[in-house]
Image 1 (cartoon, rainbow, N blue to C red):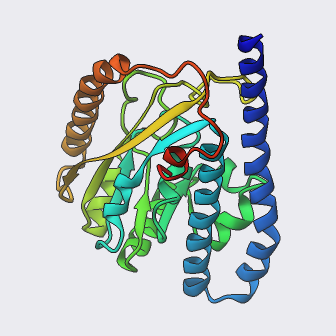
Image 2: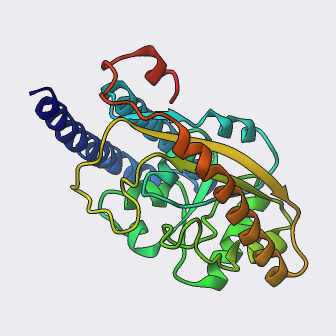
Length: 270
């Protein structure tokens, strides 16, 4: 009976999380559309990015409060108020961008074109002046412009969620943008004890809960001169760091049942 109740809880938490994210995106969409039409480009973008941080932080807080997830992602706060930098994390799951954006008030995200045109995300992404990846030349130009304006840029060097452990072959985009804009690349490591929402995970498949997420900052690389050599060095660095972290993560004991909803250690970790 106890096991059955836990499975029921996991299903309820799954549907709550998906429903909450959809609800928040749809709630913000009409306001985003109005502000996109009325606000000047620069001020509208700042408002959109700040509000995306607020909405996503509330969403992660609700997941933590329900006991579905545990988040240790405050390491990103060290990047606040710093000069422009390209934030380059590994990309294990669909929650990665949500977690990064939830901690930083002025980060521009590079999105897949199909996500940028998604009904739930389109209005908020346009207001925040997020950048689509449809054209490489336009993406590099727009990214450099946003960095020169003092913003941070979120770019996943793998280009898609990880399908080859511990990291996919990296694209040259991060090196090309860093060289064009003359800004450093801050590596970020996203780690979890679950494959929930990883590549190939069905959206409505129930994961074991609670799920733990951790984000830590890695090495900061100077803008490259040789993009090909830089990309190879970056891939080697990600591989070495993630391989080294894997045994420690596997050795951590996993909780057998969800913590009580509203437990302070969950809400305060977000």
